[in-house]
Length: 229
Image: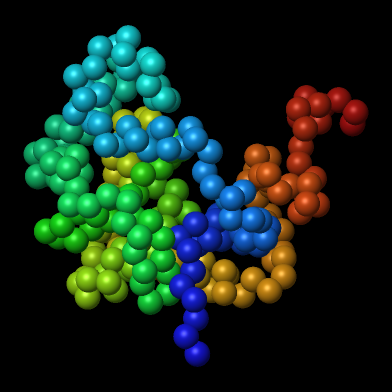
């Protein structure tokens, strides 16, 4: 029996918390759309050269996450590093943008499609970790790589993660560990016939919009300060 491909967003959420994915999948499609500020941040990734030429005052009016001078330094360092490796032009002027790719098991939007070699680049509106990429984003990247590989019948060995609000661009290889994480997330989504067990990592619950529905007790500021104990 042919199964419907799983969305990239469901895979990404399941990698973060399968229970959150369960509640998210029950929402109406319109409630799952990203807020407008996400699109404004993603748009920065189409304007890198322009942003590098902008004055500090002009940069401050952009949706960047760090002071203007630091932002330009970071993005400039990324440009120099990637230009030396022959990658800057590929990322600044990709072969295609906003491509809906459907693979054997997953599907979704690939923000940038690079050619020679074929590689996906995903644009995150959030903050990057100190090193590497977040596990949920790694799973998303593997899914995008697999979808492109399936459509083009061509192997994809690397993917890119862009954090344009911070001026950070990173690449990841399609390692055995990353592929295993992807398969684990895919299996978790496929098995969602009821709410999974709650995560043991309660830090993930603090900002979760489904915390009340989930029934998990998060620590309030009052409890963190030791009142009422």
